[in-house]
Length: 321
Image 1 (cartoon, rainbow, N blue to C red):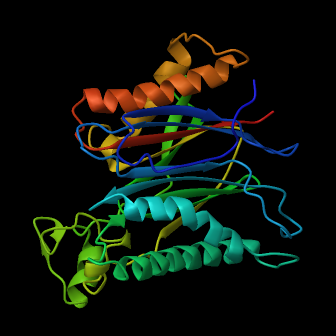
Image 2 (image 1 turned 135 degrees about the horizontal axis):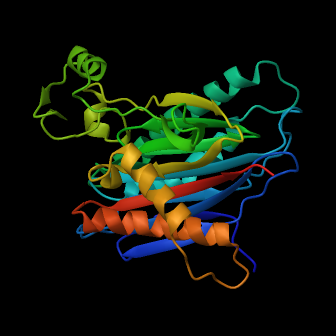
């Protein structure tokens, strides 16, 4: 079956539910990555989340030591959907324009600089567009972006959306394999000491756990009215070398994590993968069918548990041949 190999989706206000899977390009010798996404509007009147799956991030003049790039991202908008949609449509283009090219030394340092510069530029570009509107847009968005450079994952995030890795390890007591949940992102909210101090030094205040008593996150794309109060667009960066023990990465907005802990979400996915049977689409492998079902059921379960927020879940399966 022919599968789409890329997607950029803002969902806007008309989408109640999305469930899609994506085949991911992988050169011989690298882990096979396959992306699956499910989105639920929940009880919100508008879908303000956006997501991107670009399994083959094409670029000319890749550094000689790099064979593939892949990109997955989830954006959780607030105050409207325009910041999340802008980031979904533009951040990866900026990333490609800034990615190191040709023969380079210290690739890791250059990739990190590329991600930092990309987030800064995306924020500046959106704020410029937002301020030119009448009335000015006040939208903002979190961002959690996974960039695969061969078998190395870089995760850059702002705000309270998260990325976690399921890594299977041998249990010492039973000898059985168990999943260890590894955080690949860092939450940014104004109740965290370092974040609150930065906001207060900039002249802002934190009331009821929010910037100026309103904004729940302390880092974001957009939110121009809060940038003078210490809200920044500098992402946290994490680097992870994939191993044959890795099973999947989960990226999701806080609509999921309001009703699931990271461990609970990972165990829920594992429960579907290990114990469920699913009806396969024509040409679909059993593994792909299970991951697609796990992704869809996780998002639906978040809504069933009472998450009133938008819920977007991306599952990236990892398979070493």
